[in-house]
Amino acid sequence: MKIKKQLGMGIMSAALGISLIGGGTFAYFSDTESTENTFAAGTLDLAAEPTEIINVENIKPGDSMIRTFELQNNGSLDIDRVFLDTEYTVDDAEGNNTEDFGEHIEVEFLYNVDKLDEVVFSTTLAELREMTPEAVGEHALNPILGEGLPTGDFDDLVVKFNFVDNGEDQNEFQGDTLNLEWTFTATQTDGEEL
Image 1 (tube, rainbow, N blue to C red):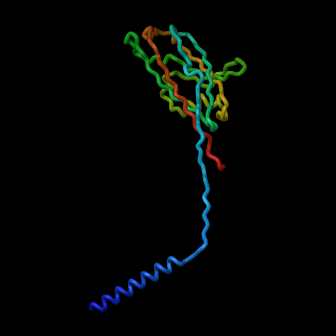
Image 2 (image 1 turned 90 degrees about the vertical axis):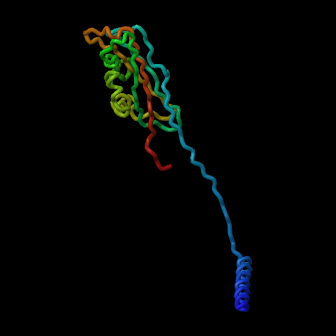
Image 3 (image 1 turned 45 degrees about the vertical axis):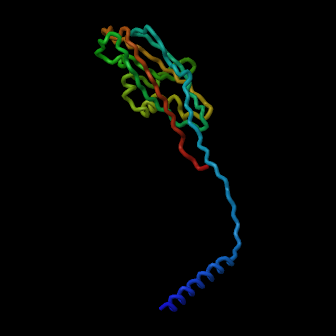
């Protein structure tokens, strides 16, 4: 049995040696080429100028305030649509409010064409807060912005705020402050084959 084992080991060693020699002597042509590729993403950069749209004191029922500001595309990609989210808080000075101060502040989004302001969309701050940003964009902003906002372009947005005089007792709002925050969101245009 010892001889068979030695013979088997010898044959296996010889086969291994032949395969190593054969593998080492196999020759072929080869060539390599590498490429360098870059995917640089563009930027969406919507800016509002000025960032403080309105800051007024001592308003009373019946007062109106018109403010104009710019929506600017400072990015490298065209903006297709702009959405608006509305949030506000009310500081109730006397702690006596039974109604929401935002229900008494009317907001009118206006076209400003040769000083002839035309109302595009009108609602109260309370209703605006309940709307989705997409709905506000559809009804108020997109009719003004039209085909979007190309790179490096800007559009004026004119807004009129009215403290509505409803002909009733509005004394509960004396000394109150409404703090309004608008968040504008821009979306890109559709993708395209480059």
